[in-house]
Picture 1 (cartoon, rainbow, N blue to C red):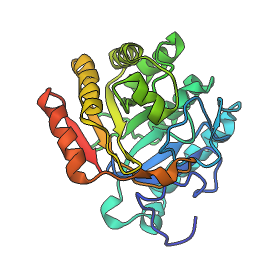
Picture 2 (spheres, rainbow, N blue to C red):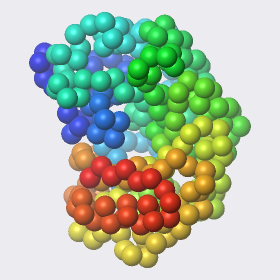
Picture 3 (tube, rainbow, N blue to C red):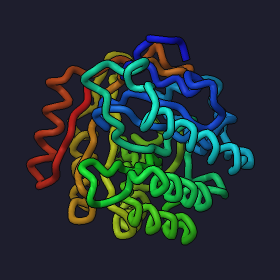
Picture 4 (cartoon, rainbow, N blue to C red):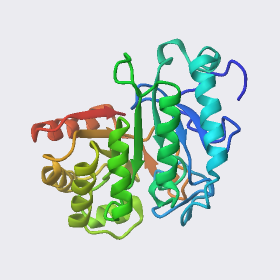
Length: 287
């Protein structure tokens, strides 16, 4: 990383740290510094969302994870943040708080077969740095940002139960309320009842938020019918989830459709958030 170059919410470059698996970001949704864990270092994912900022995105799963290297990188980075001068050198004063360790990166984290072992490493190191102690003022979160496509697999749900034990939570992607909308935005064929079933299964295992990205395509916002279908999906899971993170296009897409995408106004997103709150769910908006 370049000296004295502050991280910003507009740059989530996974290569900024020079490490293989670990990268820092300032997250507008987390509200401070997030240590990212990127298991999909080959830029492979089982979805292809139109707004994805991963360059050279391909379909697939991650390569084998070097667990020893990942543990060393995470330990060294935690040392740098907790006991070093990382915050002063790279983070603006108002954002100098470590908020979470987040599984995000360049593809679907739960598609890595070593995901359960990586969770054990995270738990070990958070205890090593006394960051999970419930008596401290600010125990950090462990967040999984996921498309939820594998939440019908017993081994993945077992990992969600482990995640819950280490102050974890899941941000489960649901960008549309119809199969046509999912095909358009996420480039996968999926039926909405299966999405609802997976959200409920995930939420039963670990505290879960729905996370939704909404964008304009060719200058056109989601239609009223599309928003209504999305609210109907939320109606089906509102008793299970903690709330909704609704966000817009913060960084440029790296997909072929990028020129067709544009940001929606704060007012438009707040209008959707108002509908979400009207059904009894918390809604957090990040335009």
